[in-house]
Amino acid sequence: MTIPASTIHKAECDVWDMPRADSMDRLHPQAGRDAVTDRYLAQIAPAYDLLARGLAQLSGVFLLALTRDGQGPGLHLDHPVYTVALDQMIEAREIIALTTAPAPARRHRDGLVALAARLSDAAQGMDRLPARSAAVDREAGTREVLRHLAAAQALLIATAEPDAGITPVDFDHACCSCAPIRAGQ
Amino acid sequence: MADYSIHVLEYCHVPKYHKSGVLYGAHNEGYVKLPYCYVLLRSADHVALVDVGYNDKDYGKHLGDKFGVENWRSPKVVLAELGLTPEDVDTVFVTHAHFDHFGNVEDFPNATFYIQRDEIEKWVWAMSLPDRLKWMMIAIDPGDVLRGVNLAAQGRLRTVEGSFENVLPGVDLHLASDSHTFGSMWVTVRNDGKAQSDDTWVLAGDLVYQFTNLENDGSIVGVDTMYTPVGLALGSQMNLLLATEAMMKQTGYENRRVIPIHEEGLADTFPCRITGEGLRISEICLADGADTFI
Picture (cartoon, chains in turn purple, cyan):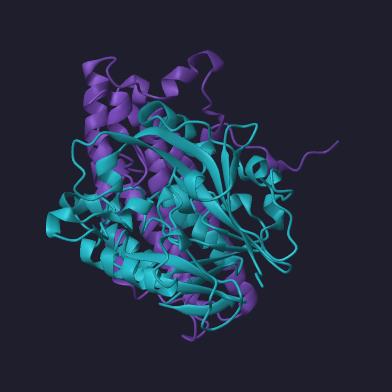
């Protein structure tokens, strides 16, 4: 059997940077285990929050654009939140760049870097969409944006650390939550 | 003549929920059981849901551990009690974008979804605000907004602006702006199909949590009973009261026809049963010729 060369990743490709099965617990830097990790989690939390918001903002603007009736076939990215989302992603990247990750948190930080990159790819894809005039091109471009957003969402879930308050959803005052029950408040 | 059977279907519950969240001003009055439910509308031509519950795959353990949410069951299990599958659902009305109402869209592959455009637009705006205003972002899952995008790309999400009459025959959608959420929606079923219906049911979403919101002790202001809004409102209590008045007017001011889905007391008002999975099915009404599931 011949395997096409393009399917084999190069030696330096980060796809090979897989964790050993016996080190899976190190994918998640646990809060309360040591001061250095706790400091990392506290510093990185605002970046996570900005990225979560960025995902919601880009998704929301894209949703509104896709469901806009009677406004022509193009994607309208004139929503002010689109610009806010781009600014917040820049801010998130800056926080990540300034945050040093201790060994147990390196893969977590890498995950956030990848998440920011995926959101950036999604934003660029959205930006290119209005220039695609053919319907088939627009559909392909839409699928591309959705792929990036879905990958970002998967990374958002994977890098959540609820014990450190790093979670995509604030359930604490949700309409149907019952926060104090388990906390014994 | 009744076109639709209406059932309230529990899919999990919180055993102890602060009463002050349910009823404005009920501080230090303890806890109530809070069922999480969606509503099934079934006619000869349509299978529709009001809300879809939340996605247990992503957050179930977190919600269980931290908030005490118990006994979550999938739509497949819940709907099977009525001889249906999630694939049978052709229409979903999303009353608002909180995770426990909008969080499980992926389980309904053949449905077209309706949500108020205001709800999405203002949530997106809220996401752009600084941290000191973060209270406005509670209970919104970015993943749900993304799932909404996927629906939109498939042409299965319709955004509604205000009222929408006969979205299905005899079914209307109404906006309660800046109330429980930015763009909460209630669903009105005119079950005899008439424009001036004598058989109207209102599915209130979270605009009303319990019947007490419709008929509370009014002695403090010198009346027998009065509306009292839900405790949790992102908009205003006044808008909640005005929406309550509009819903009640549609039913001819018959309390039992405004259906609160978080109301454990539905059991005292309508026929119901507990399934083998420990979930309650409340039978609000039956279409002509339909069999009971109780």
